[in-house]
Image 1 (tube, rainbow, N blue to C red):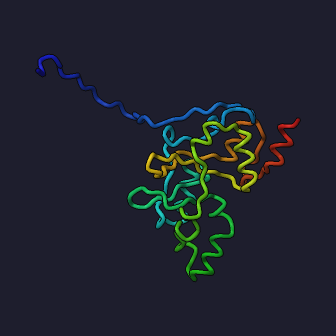
Image 2 (cartoon, rainbow, N blue to C red):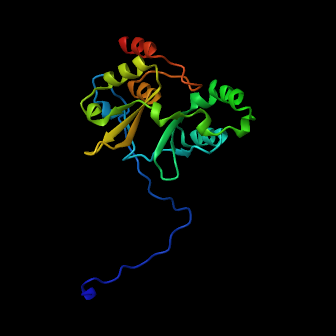
Image 3 (tube, rainbow, N blue to C red):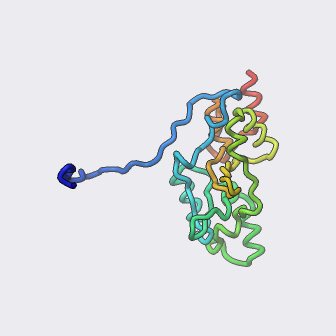
Length: 197
């Protein structure tokens, strides 16, 4: 039977070879009437950036900078989502609050100390996102006052899988709104004002 299948020839791997990674190509420009999926970072197409709850805040911050993201999914040893941590969490007042509450040094703080835990995470359903427009997502983020919105996909048994994330920074970039590179320094009213011009 194997006579019908001759072996393939090997070749040597060239120095400096990279490796294939999932990639998602979002449209450069969108409008408020564009499909919401045009601004969703889809974890079926882009690998989610994760961190363990016991990793240090410095490691979380380093990973964000390295990967060019401002939100990490916090996972347990089984890769189940137990929370999220954002750059605003790390650079804001939460570390100081945790220092006071725990009575430890800054370098002893871990992601678990300041993350938003799974039981407090509000998420959007992919079924709703599929029929939504970018304007719906902007309105949702604006109403919640958040920079990110996680999107889940529910299976028939009702189990959730985090499918992607909306980022206010990414949406602003695709809408053509100028943003500053230090901290997220735009507001949704600025987006509206720019789009109204």
